[in-house]
Length: 169
Ligand SMILES: [Zn+2]
Ligand SMILES: [Zn+2]
Ligand SMILES: [Zn+2]
Image: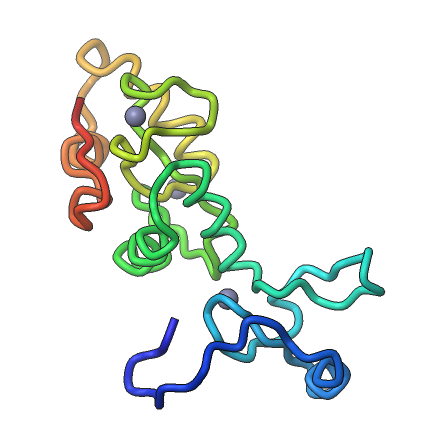
């Protein structure tokens, strides 16, 4: 992705081998997805390649994994993360990258096997909000006291604001 305001430059899809030690000596590495230099601790080291960092930063690789599993685009995951201010949509815990967040979806639409048709995505939630709170509330909604925070999330999930999904069924 080209950052707004920056000059157009050719996409660097692979770090040339001779650049690797130069970057590492500066404590940075190049992410081929977000097209920027980032601190090297933002990458997973590839043990198969002498510990050279992977070509995608943790954040981009987390977004790609989620996009693939949930049938939405990388750009939608990226926009969703930004729209949620890099926070869990329920408890508001801040996350440096998307790795700590799960993509939540309507389980009435697609069963709970960790994938989705792409139309029923709701938002990014931390593990405990996703696995504990929302799943529980969705199941018992109407029989337990109403929680406005949860009702609001279920009725107007962040993904609908992106137009990335059309949840609610
Ligand atoms: Zn990246
Ligand atoms: Zn949370
Ligand atoms: Zn679905």
